Length: 295
Ligand code: C2E
Ligand code: MG
Ligand code: MG
Ligand code: MG
Image 1 (cartoon, rainbow, N blue to C red):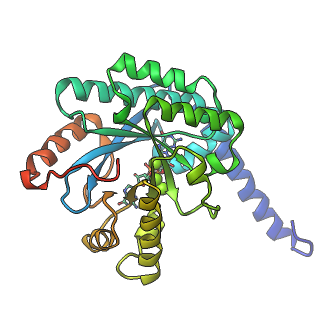
Image 2 (cartoon, rainbow, N blue to C red):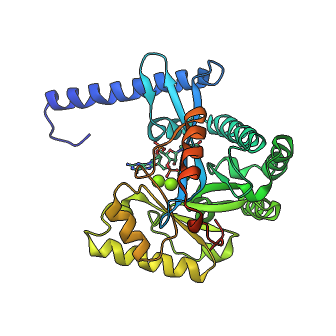
């Protein structure tokens, strides 16, 4: 606390600190029980070809339905789960549930063999030397081939990760799963890790997509990211695409894949499969093109 502040001021400060700490503890306690109380669910958001709208995959996103407070966003509870050491259990549950669902969609014929599901993984999950074996066991169990699975991680995983993490990433890639850098461009890190690690694609953060077509600097940044990524053989997915203008601008600078409210927000499995079938039905046969740039 800064010196010279009046007593009234510091009381307000203490009170709001106190409230924040209490709220955090309450959320952590509730989160510890969320899984067994069946309050966590997985929602799915389509990933499409920007140009044609042809759907190619989906991202699995965890949802928490708190009994009193309603839906709590992952931005609030994932950091708590990470600090409290709960992310390994929650992350493992999300991954297993998502792979199970993918297995069901595949066997029902809702999705084809070219559909891939992208799952977020936290740094701590990737620091477990058993992870590749566990993932490979789950893929066998649910009848999901590795080319239909992508794992998303932030660049901090590669920049600050341990040697265990490095080995885990190489083993996962050896299995054949895709490895995507999430929130790409927000980490202010040197990009050498893109060559040192077996990354297969990048997801351009929404903060760069928002200003596209309006803020020419954003257009130039994204253009450079695309050029570099394609030179390295990486796929590019733009996230948070909300408007036709953004879609046009992304297409103009060479981005192939996108995800965002323009095509649909994340929804639970039953609604997703209805929407997916509808998207596939609407796809003109002429829009089916050879696969470019991997994912
Ligand atoms: P992310 O992985 O970058 O996911 C994209 C976020 O953008 C999602 O937020 C998605 O709902 C949101 N989004 C998608 N399209 C649009 C759009 O057009 N406009 C806007 N404004 N937002 C859009 P969500 O679901 O709230 O998740 C937030 C973050 O929480 C995720 O960011 C990810 O970092 C983390 N997260 C979510 N699920 C998991 C999980 O199962 N495990 C881990 N470790 N992290 C997760
Ligand atoms: Mg993600
Ligand atoms: Mg992302
Ligand atoms: Mg993001």
